Length: 543
Ligand code: G1P
Ligand code: ZN
Image 1 (cartoon, protein in one colour):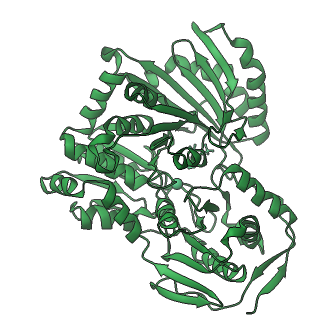
Image 2 (cartoon, protein in one colour; image 1 turned 90 degrees about the vertical axis):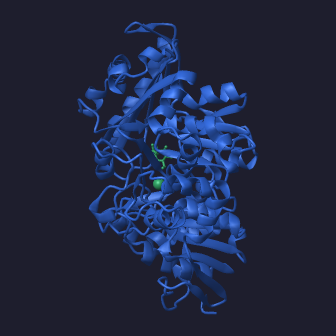
């Protein structure tokens, strides 16, 4: 075979962040940039040789080109077989499902998740291991180290593989199977959920609006919700994946999924609204005139899990990322199961699932998932809700209100200050890190501080330690303020401030969130002198 060894020099900025390597498209288009990173993956995961690799992405700009490059390099690096989604499509959860189902040694997923796409937009690449989950920190570190030493990469020359047609192709000794990107995933969903019950609910007139945001979940949602479950045609809007997401920001939150959100607050609102992000792993759920916070969603799913066939045997445990609200902790306590608190990012849940310590997990950032795969899963969360609704017959709002009456309500908000000066952001964080511990046992604006620390996590399965995962200010009454810097941005720094307070009194559970948290929001800004450091009086995004 005609393997080419191409000389290259290292780039110094190929350190994967919260979820893989994310950069602007033009950065990836520099000669050798993508190739260097892909070779660093192959050099760091020798078990890929002679084995199966899964490749696919969210269809964003540069997805096709990147896949052809990866296929050529995979052939040159001795990969035996590649499964690639038709059109180069695989949602992140579907990629995880395909890796697991076909016993692949890993997968390369092309996505920058919820970040905008297009020629000047964002692109991303990440490696998922044989368990279907994002590479753990030791592996992403190894890939980064390999990238810094790289002197050459391997490739072959061949015609492009026709990704538009399912079929089996050959590049040198490597087999390429272009597969239906939805099939395996849809089958897995049918195993977990009571499709008959959900079908019955749609038949009886239940109305759903699902916003695919011109991103990857369009084909998945149409097939599963409309074709298999009988939701009305047109239930899925913005269903065609587009390389630039139709110019939108494929992030399912109240600001970006505007079309669907407006409909959910209109007079003729459907029973349920939902949206997913660029690569299909996030979800947002709304009832009529009612927004379910992701933290509450996780808690409600946990509390009602045994109503769903795939979880009828109960949960081994649950987990949430540290900044996520403690709503699920209340449910775990009442179920008598463990609740783990992990750093931000899905990669920390994998070990807990592999060791069967947890079944469900989630993050405040519109991510919920379970041990059925090793990624968060947008459409799965929507189906979970549909299944619960089909069994209970109540509205989403009633289900959540009932949940609060039993477990209490965790008022919760996140304030983001985007695109701020990186240096100012890190100075703010180190200033906080040094002053906050002195506040313990003191009162700030009338609230007694119980603890203040830098969150550090010791993985209970492999003992690995992840330090500096956010600064916590914990009050005696259970309220919390958390500060951390985003690890997924591609421009400047983003300061995230997470604010939470617990309310057990049912008569006080119906307040506006920003109002209920007003004191803590004020404290959060004052303590960190946010305006002073960022030059911004208000956050850019509030969720
Ligand atoms: C953000 C979210 C985090 C999520 C990640 C990938 O990371 O906050 O919960 O796991 O995107 O979807 P951040 O930008 O905060 O580092
Ligand atoms: Zn995503």
